[in-house]
Structures are given as structure tokens and as C-alpha cells.
Length: 388
Image 1: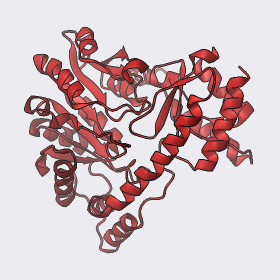
Image 2 (image 1 turned 120 degrees about the vertical axis):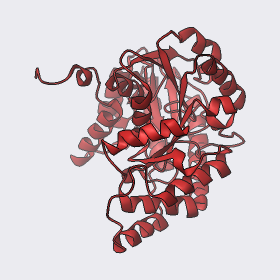
Image 3 (image 1 turned 60 degrees about the horizontal axis):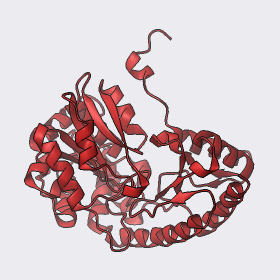
Image 4 (image 1 turned 30 degrees about the vertical axis):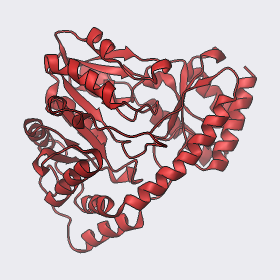
């Protein structure tokens, strides 16, 4: 239709949702499908989170709140960031959002003007470039390598910069790679950003899902200079199994936090009121739940890593966080969408094509499912690989 804006026409639909929906449609027809495409925990939300939301409903907490969220949740988030990630924010610097996705979009809208460039390391989460385009900006993809654990270097960042560069997006731990930036790597990137006052959008939604001896380093915690340029994004979907609750947050220097709150006040307004009380319970009571979740995922991660390393014609690096593997399928000689379509229709295994993340010779495998499903799915994937 001629009435549709060019801004929207530039945006591509989400391939991750497309694959997931296709697998669900097959299941609804009675077909057995082994789903490794999803980006959400298979566990239910904690009981204490549900009870807190129910109590809030029963107490009539169903009215508007301030656009940036209820004060006690904003304070709890600030306390949580200080205690767990050594980054200091005042409650007034926190904006509670309808999912971390909205926090990312608010941040981009607050900073990016028409024609501004945003540097995005590839592979990247599918929504980053589309958000930039919706804001009128220009996504600048920088290819990373498995040899460097799929992370952008300070040198690559500097080479990609132009006078129009306004922001860089750092996702740690990363989706789809599971990569984790060290303090030294963040410091080097931050030093480059500080030369030109380039904003760092630090998407840390998987911050609590880190394995073994590895440690998440919050970007804003590294130095005062980096803190002053960083918008920290996090939320409740991944670590607390609260994807459908749609609760995230951004924490930023006061001027940026104020602008993001203003944007939200004219778009979605506050995140769902009673759900915010569930999020408050998650922060106050959720440590054991998160620890158990991380322990379970680490078992799956190690199992899957051992299996994938043994499969011919593919390569894999060990993820340090999140709950994905990015598998290099160059040796199979297939474009990623073609590979995923054959794997789903012939072997009933659903994974996400790497082209969705900017790498057409890979697939993303999620281990948000049981070991039994993982075992059967990877057995079928190995059969597929040996047949090619």
C-alpha cells in the first residue's frame, strides 16, 4: 500500500519468530518437532513472582504508575546493579520498560537522529538493526570472528567510525554467540568511544546466565568515563523466566534517563502495574531460582558442546553465557535458510538461520529445553550433517 511509511518498509520481520511459529504450526498438526529455536527459558515463572503479582491485583494495584515505573522497583533495580555488577545508579536514573526490547528502542530513539550511524558487531541480535532503521539511523555492521569469540575489537570499532557515528551496541553475554566481553576489552572499546563521545548501548539481558569461572562485567562499571557514555539495559525475561511479563529496564546518566522516560510517557506509558510488583519479588527473592537455572543450563551447555564438537562438517566455539550456540555450518555448503528449512521439514528439528543474525553460514541452537529433547535433536542434526 502506498500509505505505508518508507521507515517501516525498510524493516524486516523477525526470522526467529517465523521459525518458532512454523514449528508450532507443525506441532498443532500433530507432527513431532524438536524445537531448538526459542529464546526463552522452558521453566515457568517462579511461584513467588506470581504470588506477588496476584497480591498486587487483589490490593487494587491496577492504576497508572509514573512512566518510569514504581519507585520501589526502580530503587530495587539500582540496589541490584550496585550489589551484583558494581555499577552505581540512583533510582531516578532507572526507567522500567515493557521488556528489555523497549528499553533498547527507547535508548536508540533518545540518541539517534536521521542519518546517524550505529555500529553493530555481527553476529547480532535480530532487532538491533531494525530498531536503528525505525529511528531513522543507519546500522553499520562490523564482522567479528570465531577466533575472537565473536567480539568486536577496539581497532575494528575505530576503523568503522565516521563523523556520523553516534552509538555502538555491545551485547554481553551475547545473542546468538554466548560471547562475554572482559574488563580489558570493554576498557579498550570505551576508550575509543570517549574520544568522540559515542554512546554505548550495553545490552546485558543475559548478565546472570554466565557459566563456570567466567564473570559478567557490566560495561558501565569499568570507568567513570565509560559510565558517562553508557546506557545499561537489562530485564527479567531470561534469568527469572518471565518472558511473557514484558518487563525490562534501562539505567543511564540522568539526562538520558529523563529523555527515555519522556519517550515512554508518549508511547506505552508505564509497564503493567501489577507485573512490576512481580519483578520486585524477583529481585528480592530470586537468587536461588537463578542459581538453579544457571546450574541446569550449564549441564545442557556442556552436554551440547561435547556433542556438537563431534559432528563432522561443522565448527563450534564454547559459549560463556546466555543459552545459545552459534554453529559454523560453512562445511555443509548450504545457505542458512535453506539448511534450516531442510532440517525442519526432513528431520523435524527447528533452529534459527544465521542470516537472521548477519551470518549466512551458521545456525543458532538454543538449549532452552530438556536433555532428552536436546539428545534427540542433536542426533538428528548429526544425521543431517553426515548426509551432506
